[in-house]
Length: 166
Image (cartoon, rainbow, N blue to C red; front, side, top):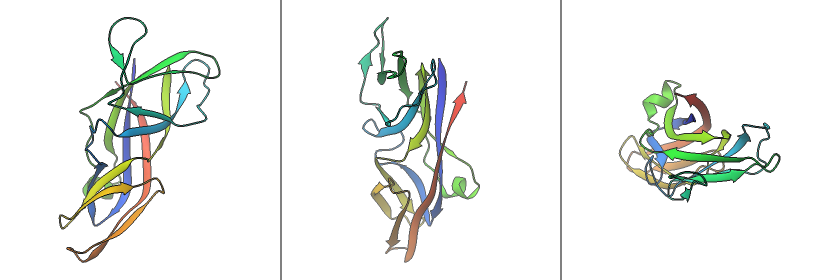
């Protein structure tokens, strides 16, 4: 059992609390990344999608996981199980300090997640309290105007890291 913690950061202008639309533990939010096979080292060509709501029974023993996928190169099965409760929104303070905010913990067996892709819908709020929802970060940035605060708001320079944790 190896756990990987997905962490994100970005440059936030007049925004804070960047997180998936339904919160860090949103059961419908899709995490997209490429996976590397633990046996042969092959990296998937397409992004793998993992969602908390999607569960499948383990082929051996009892329990469930969020993804079972066979390596197209060597044929070995791997599983990815999401562990909610570790995620936090990316705050302006965290962003300005150059730190990363934890988003989701993955228990991986046979696979290692690599190259996270910012997909799905996100939300954030301005420093004046205006809520911005349904933010699409797939293009790598977001820009809008906060009428209440009379200032531009922006998300840019999105970065993710996937760290092995114990």
